[in-house]
Image (cartoon, rainbow, N blue to C red):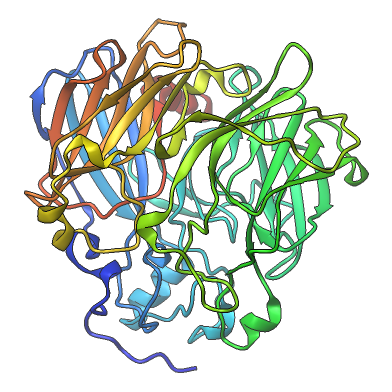
Length: 499
């Protein structure tokens, strides 16, 4: 296939208004701060957005097929600087040299204009581990970047140890052992039901490598890790290699496929150890956390929708829900890991609101948690949808508030940023020296549809409903997917070891 040179972005919602590609690299120091940033905050908020550098030659390309553009918001001594650079993937470099888009449909190599060794856009998550900033896309290995300069070092295969051709966009980190717990799905290539699970120690050495075969070839965007178990929830978006070869979509919703959850021992697993439990056809979203309770049961908290959240990939008949009707709720499965039944009991609804992008105090990952943070959509809060609707663009889930849920009391607090604002995924920043869960700050990018620019909103958990500080950016950052907070001491410690 010869790709035409397209000189402007398609007149589609995912490329217009606030969703218009940003395509900016650079840095700005001393961003404007309204309010006060506590002096104990010293670190960097890394986040990534899909941001195509070239107009696609696929007319209706989904918004998250864009190149990974990494932002670093560095906070120290009450001031904020911003730096942004694209990940220099194979795709990015070759398209820049060609002066046009060469990659075809989302995760369909048969529609590309040229052959790529690695098709990654590195646009889904960015994590810090063992001195490396890793830009992730779940169809390929990570790309390593310098956490201080955002310079791309190259494709990262963990010194040749990476066993699978794919790597999750949501690795988990054990705060006690320093391990990064990982997996890859479609681990032997497109259309394969294979899953490869493994752990990476704080010394960089791989362990507990285990190959599994899933009941169907499905998307596994996120997974859960606790002290003794890992869980793999399968989204009923299925891949078919013949459909790919015919130029079709990688994913197709299957309303007949149940929600499968695979249970595997975390340490020393064998392929025969996995159990596949199932529940109603539904869409498992992002995971809050999982742990084992005193009875030895697994407590698994995540977002669940009864509809196809990825509505742009409909079922075989072309049927998909109206995006305005899609609701996701925070739910809890309680699972006996030794069960002989294949059927999951119905989950408990932890919060009735329409929510997603769940986060905890990461120091309590794999352990019992009390505090939950997430994006919330509540039209009753007073968002001026009439004003912002023409400025939205399309293809992004919309949330107009940040929420804090205390599971011990069942009470929730809501931060509403304003009538012309929508929020992105938050990150939690612990207060320096405090070991108390939830004692800290919440930081999130916010879209301001009045100024058509981006803001950072910083909240103190002791006064959640009012912002501690609002940081203005001189640019509009396209909505992103995921990001993480990294303390400056962690980067400095890694620098000391490498030197």
